[in-house]
Each structure stands twice: as structure tokens, then as C-alpha cells.
Image 1 (tube, rainbow, N blue to C red):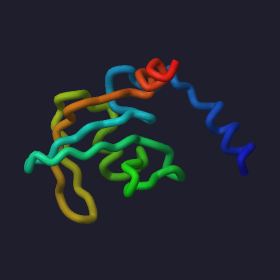
Image 2 (cartoon, one colour):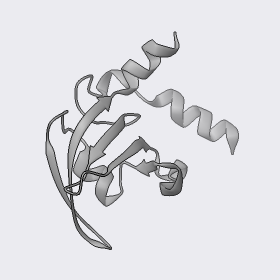
Image 3 (spheres, rainbow, N blue to C red):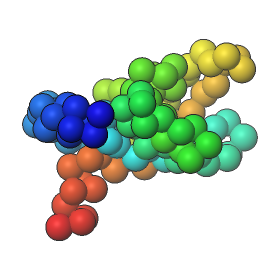
Length: 101
């Protein structure tokens, strides 16, 4: 199972992940209308753990965030109703890699 996972990851083309928009691996800081801030990282569906702030790119919020930019407002229908956010900070997977190097 681990070998399969490693081969899937190696097939990912990080050059297709946007450098200035939300995509796989991005860490997104969101502010809701009440002024609360929440931070999510977009991950593969099997790695999703909403309690830890890791959401799938296939989840309702993940899909709504993909290809958005810092300053954009996002509305998303979730099982708990309509939620609205403003993207106040975006760190893409490319920036994360650079910070670790």
C-alpha cells in the first residue's frame, strides 16, 4: 500500500499546481463574516482530517477554494448550510517548498 502511495505521489506534476492561486497543498487562511479566522490545508482525499485543518480538494469547501486568490470572497454550500469566507492569506505548495529548503 505504501509503494502504491509513493508511486501516486511521484506522478503528481507540481508544475500544474498554480503558483498564485489556491490548489493542492495550499494553506489558506479564511475569515468569516463574524471575523473568525480558520486555516485549512488542501490535501488528497485520503489525507483529509477536518479536525486538524486538512481538507480534501474534493470537499465542498476545497472545491470552492480551488483557483481562488488572496482577497477573493468564497461562498460554499456545506452540510451545515451556506458559509462565506474571505481569503486573507494564501501559501501555495511552491512557497512551502521554498520555505523548507
